[in-house]
Length: 496
Image 1 (cartoon, rainbow, N blue to C red):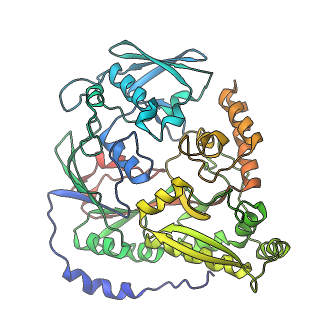
Image 2: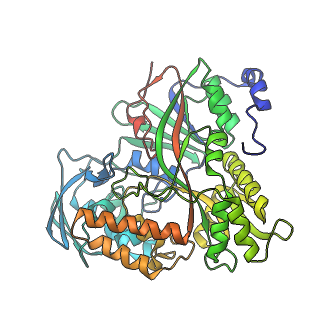
Image 3: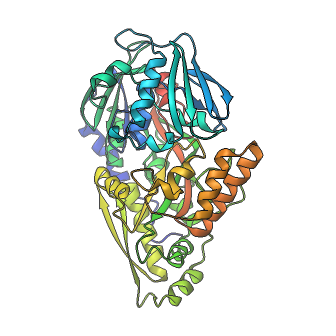
């Protein structure tokens, strides 16, 4: 059993008493409680999970994905007219923006042209690097021309479409979003509270950031929140499963939790150190005791059911003696430990995971200093490369082009998300080859080989795929969890 984990907590005894101190809610809105704050409501800049999930409610996209992560039409159907020429035709009826005009091909062109403009500084520009030109054919038809063939290209056209007029005017879509999604923004007092209105019936929703999990649960049981999703300690989830006021929802997830390293650092740049970290951690025990079984072990960035996933990869096995041998070869031991600085957010669950990981690492000969920060500061440090080691999760991965974005040597920020500065010419070559492979089977084979090399090199230590967990009040119906944790089901939720 993981040392320091206890099935009981003092707050379980206090919850029934603390509940009576809460105020009565306003029942006009349905309230979703989450742990992290919204960073942006502009899809051109959304890279964090919460912002991306809310942006899906506000905006519509050309392409989406099915259960097997294959691209499917959303706003548009497409034809591949040549290896480097794609034509997208908007489906009818086309949705309208708030000013009344129907979304058209010029809105599509303007959105993607804006993201491709270096002056916009969009983090999504790198995923569109192959786009050579965009041409409007008529009000419903837009053509994309590529600099080289890419059979996976439709899968990158998932940005929310913005109005061309607003882009030309330089509108701040973070403060004043304008899309054609199932919701519109009513208010955003700050990053902790977003108020949305469902277009079809006027139902109001509030998405509230409540960092502390216990406080979120208190608000849920008192009726100040109607549902909460994820970032709940296992003990709280188990306790809530027996409360009559609520229902527990669970769904296998695709969110990939990992340890990332700075490969330019003289310590974590050494593969032997990274391998010692991987061998020191008993992932099965953490999933069983800390996550109450609400996760499955990961061997690569894509889950095994993904068409480009690798079912044969299980990750690095727990081998503390092997970790000690690796550190001993470097001149380190528990008596003479190797120091690591480990960054994480100040989310309570992430801190608990960090504490357990530190415990495992210190048993084999590391001296780990945890540095926790508010989400904005932490995420800013990671994007800027100001870290030695950290933990994060990739959320909602659909396209295997993620390997280019995260691991290609040309994707070092700001060109992509290769934040650890990983460079392997063989991986670069395989990424390029997979993007142009003629057959599905060949692309699948190449992506699986990429994942084998990544597990060998360990720019990331794969940890687990976290389940999606939600707790809803008994009078709330219609909510369904998605594999990637999106909030799309709010479009169907109702109170009874």
